[in-house]
Amino acid sequence: MSLSFVKLRDALSQRIHEFESGRCFDLEITTCWDFPYQSPEGMKFGDNKFHGCTPALAIWNLLLRYTNPGDLVVDCMAGSGTTLDVSRALGRRAIGLDINPTRSGIFKNDARILPFGDDTVDFHFVDSPYSNNLHYSDEPDCIGKLSANDDRFFMEMSKVVSEVYRTLKPDKYAAWIISDEYKSGCFVPVGFKIFKILNAFLEPVDTIVVVRHNDRSANPMWSHRARKHNFFLRGFKYLFILRKKGRKGGSVE
Image (cartoon, rainbow, N blue to C red; front, side, top):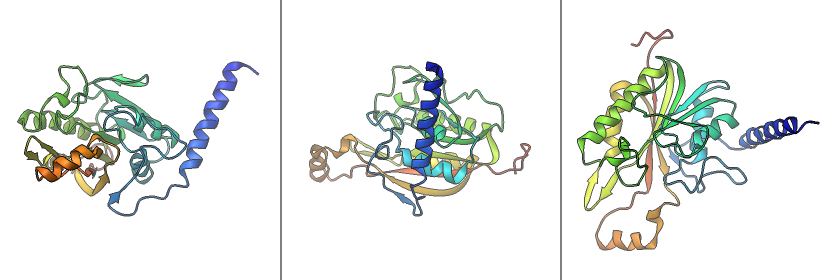
């Protein structure tokens, strides 16, 4: 038995194990999703040490509800690759793009210009920066270098939304995770502003609250500061689910 065959067999066996394991996860049935860990026990999707890493079961739920095996799933801000790992475990085709790729299999690309034709993607997932709260990359054009207090942040995000709309097939779905910002005594309702942009292109399907875990605000120091200075720590992110209205063939209503 050749070494290459053994590697292929083992890789296939792992994928089957991941798929079968996923069958025991019930679909979420409320609009509050609370996943204590980034990946389910005994499984690894993406990198839980990556700042702002998406909960794997959030993507799992979305793909089971809104895609079919063989569909093309695109994550244009792929981060540590959670969407890629979950998609492939569920038998979906997946392409990950990022302005600052963190691993092999993620292609360098600016989300404001997607390398896909019109009406070609079955599902878009986006977990975007919500300000310059983190150091996302050293790329000068990174949207995460812009503050949510700067109108340019939302102008650039609107370009991403436009590309998501352009490349998404009619009657197919997209999902976008975003959080509000409170910084230096200033609150910015980033989620509402992004939703307004999304709603200009896509039809809202539902809004989910994804509970935040294991980020830096869990430090007791921040709890003390929040009480002392009378502000709230970010306890959740918005997950907006949307659909591109239209008929097959690209005729948009």
